[in-house]
Amino acid sequence: MLIGLTGFVTAWSQSFILPNYGLKSPETLEISKIEATSSSTAFYMSIENRIQNGFFCADKNIYMIYPDGSRSKLVTASNIPVCPDTYKFKTSGEKLDFVLVFPPLKAWTAWIDLVEECNENCFSFYGVTLDNVLNKQLDDVFDKASKGKPADNIVLFESLLDSIASQNLGIEGLLYINIIEAAIEESDKVNIIVWYKRLAASDAPGLSHYLKYLNDKGIKY
Image (spheres, rainbow, N blue to C red):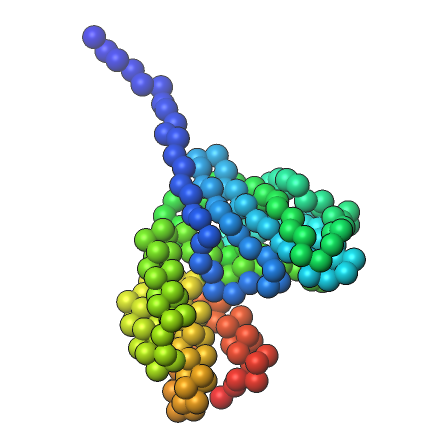
């Protein structure tokens, strides 16, 4: 008996709840969940209005950008107008929940950037972590740091940075920033300068964004 297989598709899915990221804009925008399946990648997001007569929209030019620079364009957006149409908030503190859907993730993608390309007030997330083990590790470290002393936090973040430094991860720049900010809290100028220069000389993905973040705060050596 000859049994022939004409082909099959394996369905799969993976969720990332409150994934960590390196930098974002605006501050009130959040990614609550990412659902990655064999057919699509959905970002469940929310934004909080903090101003009078606030409004929000999503440009049609929104991209998932991979570590190698390749990109996937937004397919559909749900519960949010596409610019120039806008959602007008009724009150300060109101939140808008919406979903952005992209093509399926490439296999073995450890992180991505989510970037809106528009004329003004564009949103962005850099270094969104797509590894639940690493996300748990990051959550634990950030939780410990929130309760720890600045000097101890420098050691804590340095240890994590050493463990991932060779993996070209999008979150790497954030660990440098946390070390520098802990050194600032400790009034440790030597460590501030040392770690700024280490960051500037590193191959951290998205390096220019992290340096700009520090420079905008008046930190530059």
